[in-house]
Image 1: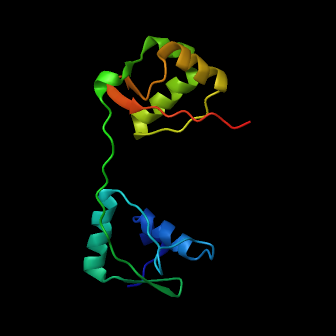
Image 2: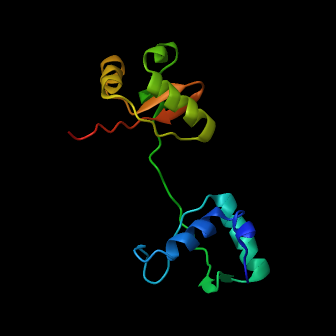
Length: 146
């Protein structure tokens, strides 16, 4: 099957994979490139393969597209160990912005000044989880190396 760049917009994982397979330094498993996709996109790619076949022609090159599934387990946070945060976030602007972004998108990575990280530890202790606006969020702080 031949695929156009417009069609690739519907399949960001395939699009990204095609880009990376053209880079010589790409690390691949054996002779194939592996990419992760959300379940909805996996279903869409599966439907594409069923309708049009699994050999993809793009830019004069041919690629075999196939799906391998993986089940991922992640440690579940114990809500009893989470810290409730709310009004006190006015003193932690970077943490508050990160939580607001995570609330919208599901996750967030923000730069937090070391002084704010130290204030967080002073206020909440070493905590992995906060409860904010009805949801639980895992916190991970990385302090820059000097």
